[in-house]
Length: 437
Image 1 (tube, rainbow, N blue to C red):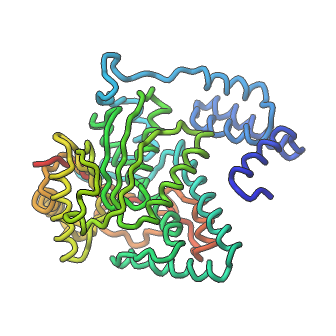
Image 2 (image 1 turned 30 degrees about the vertical axis):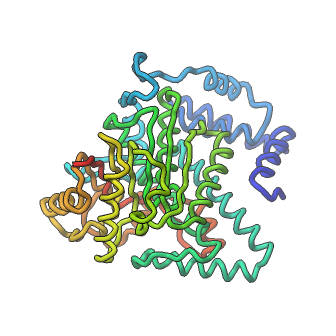
């Protein structure tokens, strides 16, 4: 059996070129499914079938070859104004917005609440498959080297990250903690980041050349969400030449490093199915609470976007201290007319309860954005999988019925983290766009 994802891909190619009887039967079945998908007008589904067919049998059947040639020769529809310079803003394309809104099943429940129960299956299966291979390969390698030590490291990592559910910061002392974090949190947080960048694009605030400063960035989740959105857009519109500079500040060096490792792996593996998105990375290992004393370690520049995703503290003292530091970083690092993008769990908005009124919610958000962060609120939505502000009795049952599953990464969690249930893509966050007051 092949041991690495690269060897697996080589083995699949060899099998496709000398197919077994089973592969031939599967090839016939996939060709039939391709024909039916095109007959029904489901082009995106047909592309996925074509990808599977290429891995199953070669040469492709005549009908599949015809569809493959059409896809390669078909020029993408250009929606950028021809007079725009390379750093000008995107023209928000209505068809691309409609496509993504439908895939995520976005429904406005009221002026401030959006329900989201879908996913863009053109890009998320690719990152989930790559993440599953990346983490499983790392776990398998470490387990073969020293099973006893690996078991101890994995146990410490699970216990360490379990504190996040109780508002306790992990210490990341185990070498396996970054991998456990990637398994448990990367996909769902990238899901939120994708939607945040989507609304940035929808509002016409995305350009071909921009810079991002991501605070408390973890493994670079905001960059993954941005990349996935651009890959989605690239399947509907012609993207210009992109110049994106992504800079992160993160306390945990190992979490940063594993995130960058996975980015490189994902960029290589997903190139089979997706257009690679070039981002220039700069990672700075820095504790936010030491920013005042060590700000000289960061590049002397201002950024078009400053992002804070899921890094707001429940503890009152740490909350006040972190907000003062965020205000200082915004003053120091945000470019004129720059955007601050916030992704905030509902429970981290001070005073927010499940049963608060819409009027109370608006006032709490105003205080959070204007008073605590010193910003001017430009746009905000509470995005919830349930479409409710209140708590539902059995969210697990709701997720199983309505939310997209994470079947591949759940297999890794089952085999190594003793998790028996299937994880789902779910969201319960405020997505906020703001500017300096």
